[in-house]
Image 1 (cartoon, rainbow, N blue to C red):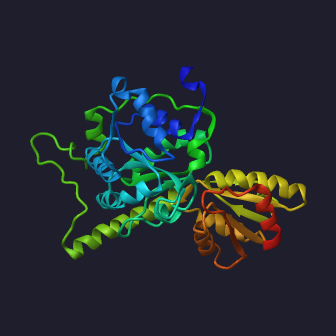
Image 2: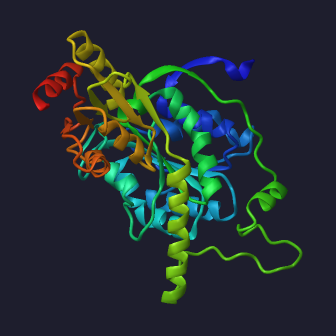
Image 3: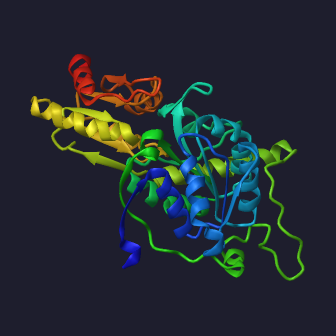
Length: 359
């Protein structure tokens, strides 16, 4: 029953508690606003004394992502967290991990940019997360929580998907979700896997060879062009499988909707209030909330476009997800974008006014 206790905490704190409870083996990170509470909470909880989880503050984001690379190569459940400029510094390591097909969790609690920008919330890392911010043809599995509860729930889900497909996964949250306090039911404790279980579940890992045989080699390097193409084609086939099986989204008041808002994270919360206001004024509008930003819910957006008069992409940025919406819609209906910049969060009444003037 203790596992079902309702607790009030920040989204960042929920990430940390969920990591301990889902059997995470190691966290390697560096503090940066607005996600520093992840590392602070782990340090406060001291899981190395209870579950054996390693918690280490690295000297930089570059160091932390390469520590994650090393831990992931042994089949361990490892993770890091940062915010926008810090994740930029991790891009080379993330690309290496995608190329080496290593499962791990990266948490990005977004702040405004470009550059150092502001410590206030933003959603302007969509391109970086969903289009492959590093080099090469790769994708991360990207989950976008819209509540503190989902911050907790998505830790285990991200690890599950990462290991299922041997691919890095990212929880892409904005600063508002990371800093807000809500009631949350933390997940039950999972025991950390034994070395024998890791060897069985991860035969590809560096610890996966027994009986005197040579250890596996983990690398993203292949100097022969023909072999590199074969590797890339295999990875692309894996991405097609993920797109076919792992799309997740929420639909809200769409059954009779004449217009639709597409939004993720805290923007989706704003959208729900906007929908309440709009419907009180006779405007039939609903929400499609992508939970997986990659794979993006292309078919769901396409189906939506077949029965509404227009779609509004609500984002806390200058317009990034709207490109994927337009690609899915293929010109079937008008698609507009509305967002605020510099850490300013849109007001629900603003969104209603945009709906009225856009279609």
